[in-house]
Length: 301
Image (tube, rainbow, N blue to C red; front, side):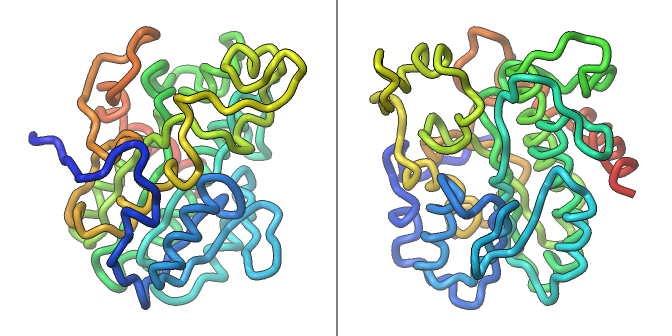
């Protein structure tokens, strides 16, 4: 399979990806679109003419309430939606919760928020996605998917010791498997789905990290002041791959793939602690995608 390439790179901004593209009439949902990468994704899509609905846990005027960790909230959002959806950018997420937390439905909170809530939202809006034809689903994953496969035996850390980063990595593997699962089921409905990692971007996603971790990552100076390392990109740059996959004609018909923050499709690799780029084979395994789809379907019924 030939990897998809684009003329963009890791420093390309979302507005540059959408330059010259008219999205007038397109209806797009962006979860977590009120800050960080989600905010810049929403801004760029709106600037290109799209009607963007920002779905967020604490909505401001003009936004819609959506708590992805609460399936009742997701169902309410779905029930209140009318008309077609041309794209969903599944952007909202939580990272590295220091202690194990459980959502109301019994799922570990990172997995419930990052994966299951989006699964319920996207599958709930399936009929709306297929109304116009050519709809797209974009799932924001992370390079952390290279670290952990999905643990079907103990996904909620009921028996194994809880580890904040293992839980986060597993949820991001699940996000890639979500895109693969959609591609395996909905291509005939004219719906494409792809996942990507936005790279290192300073956003509210780091809010649960302690100061020692922040210093080790180069995000704080010795006095606790904020730093932005050279290897980080801006939120506008981090949003570039989101809008590429949501709206660019360069990826028309592309589905079930994983892209990196340089706006290029990633190579499938063996995952592990020393692997820095690519998508882990376990993250795009069709059997795992099908198994996870069935597991999630039972939980949202």
